[in-house]
Length: 240
Image (cartoon, rainbow, N blue to C red; front, top):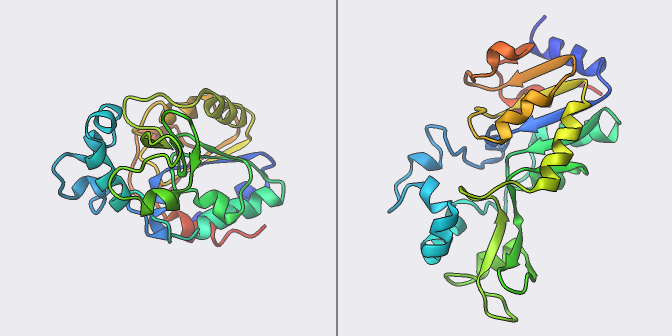
């Protein structure tokens, strides 16, 4: 059997699927992968992206942080691809119990998924650092230089997990609950090098651990099935 036939059989026999996705899930929507050859890490800035996207840099160089963030992290015109749409379809059919994503683009929700655990936050949520008023991505995009609260004039911070910051406890607990009770876990578009997110795979006790990634990962030997396909191209052909 080919990749599609094998994956179709697995999904047909599964009742509690969890989809765990990384940056590779959204590259087919035109959002760059941080660590790919053509990704953000390969582009030229005054500072390396991993430093710009850190807590200390946000505090100490807020203007430069937002120059990069607005230019490279806000992809407001991106649309869900076949992978996002299939996850939403599987959830609606009662076969997929949760999406756990390392992405901050909100494309799973845009596709229709309801139960999404965003480990690293979302560009669609932004809060005043003082009064905690909510602001949309559009407000951030249209602001000049550093976006300020329109009520107290304090700096607004995106609800994304920067380097040096911890993950949200409620999000982590929800994701681990879903993973630990899943019978099939589809891990897609991630190099599994970013912790603590990658460590969550240890909590999977189900039957089928499926990896869909174009490049090898350190978890390949532990997976039941490894497919070297584009996520959207493969998942999009699954019939429900």
